[in-house]
Length: 65
Image: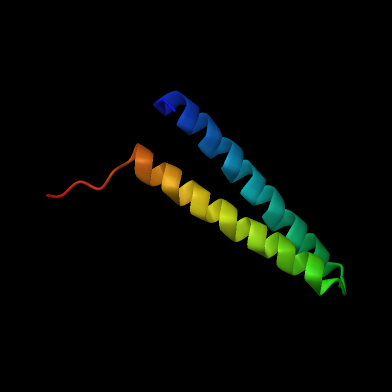
């Protein structure tokens, strides 16, 4: 993947991460008793966060001073 594709993928993942966060908050505030669904959404959100971190590390590698 080139840099442009990575940036596009990163924005897509961040958007999905925000959407999952909103869905989790909505379910929690609504008093949902479906803890399994909430747990699955949280697990998906964590996987997205890991993917985001990998892409960000690829785009902005550590610079040793």
